[in-house]
Structures are given as C-alpha cells and as structure tokens.
Amino acid sequence: MQKKLTITVDEKIYEGLYKIIGPRKISKFVEELVRPHVVHPNLESAYAQMAKDKKREDEALEWAETTFKDIAHEKR
Image (cartoon, rainbow, N blue to C red; front, top):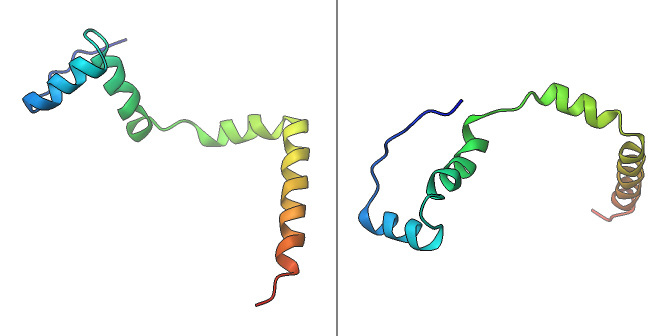
C-alpha cells in the first residue's frame, strides 16, 4: 500500500530532479534512496537462508581460510 507524502525542496533541487530523473519518476527515485535507511530487513532470517546455500558457504569458508593463512605469515 502506498501513502502520499508532500515534501518541500529547494527550487534548484526540484529542477535537477525533474531534468535528470524525469517527470513522474521522482517519487520512485526518492523511495529507493530512502528505503535502506528506514526499512530494516529481518537479518536473522536472511542469514539463515544464506547459510543453506552450500556452494556459497563453501566459497566463503575457502576465502576465510586463505585470508587467515595470509595474515598468519605477516610480520608485525
């Protein structure tokens, strides 16, 4: 469900949005910019789903082990 929101911006900002983003596309542009800052996904569920991906987990483990070996041989 969508809600209507009225915001006020500087005239130059509006002209730039209109010119670069295009008419009738500004709302979607603003929504996509704002979404990650205000809508937080269920990370626990997302991580659990990622952990079920065997190929991805194997690649991640291989990368982590390789990185660890590199760090172990660095001089301090």
